[in-house]
Length: 173
Image (tube, rainbow, N blue to C red; front, side, top):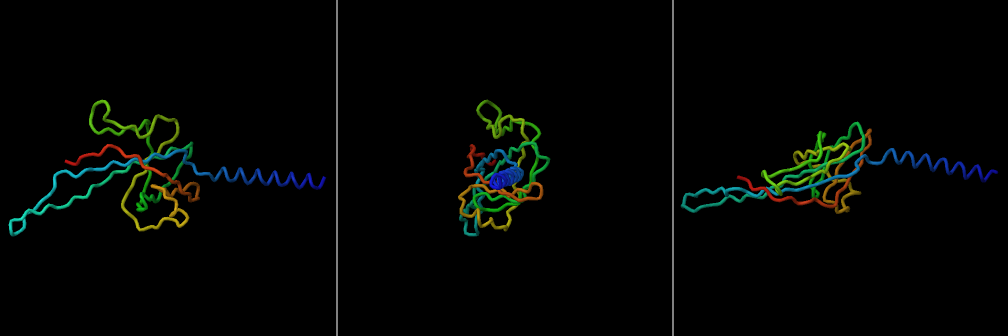
């Protein structure tokens, strides 16, 4: 009988541990990441005092579109995001309607669906200025393209994405 009580206690403790772990599970169900390169428009040039034309090199830039799909959470907070190991401050904005469609020009075939229609909550990650914050050591070796530092119910967790989908480039005017 004593061993039966011991086994029962182990089962109860195991169930409690499992249920507490489920409550701490990250609230992100899916994440979507897209990159759109912005091709430079007209190359700026100046003429030096000797009459030589000097072109100012223009580096291509990129816009990132990152969305998080969650269950019925009241709030989630994103403080930092690492994109290709570069840290940025970040914020969140609730998306009121899905699907999320990014269009370049009017007409068929000129739009990309970033998030399909869903009844789940969808949040847009707003990538802000670069930050000096270092990536957590445990994640440095992960080879993830994106690492998102989230705060939910006072607990920090990290969500990683292994790939960023490339969208058609946008030409600057």
